[in-house]
View 1 (cartoon, rainbow, N blue to C red):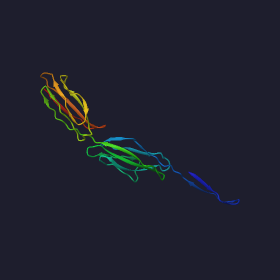
View 2: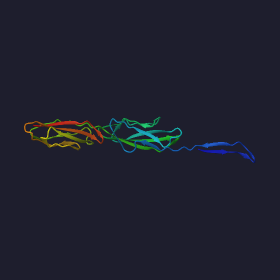
View 3: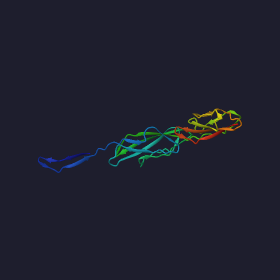
View 4: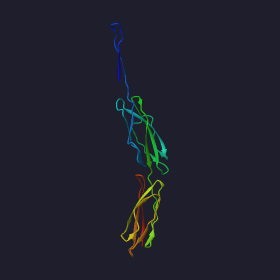
Length: 219
């Protein structure tokens, strides 16, 4: 603040001084946590904490708007009233595809409005893999495990395998996009019945769906 003190006078005759104070408030610079590119899984809410460089006086208030910038999304909020200092939205991507929302946030403190800033979040759907029915082979055969889900072509598949004994071979772990796991299984156990279990887990980024299993029997 700046204090002005004014004293009037006529010659040596001075009047009482009067004062005027001007307050200069800082313009807030908005901050958000977490920062940078944020990716969530469907079902996990945003949790943006808003703050600013101004902590004196009445503190900082915030308003924000939101816009879908990629794909289709529901439950994204905008606020122009008493908004608080956090953005908690249970965002839900549509059409089984990732979607992105951009929040534009404007801070105000002590009558001074700061520059708006933007924070974006991408939300991935949770893939649901299609289950494959296994087959029975006579000594040898080729698998056809489906790599398919409701979120293709965005889905990556990881699979693990397990054989019933060392007498069955031809299976291996792996990963890939949509398609088919085609592996040639062979049993050399004689009269014993062998089997191979495939466990397939679909994911989009760090968002994993429930694994599905398929068993092949080799007679």
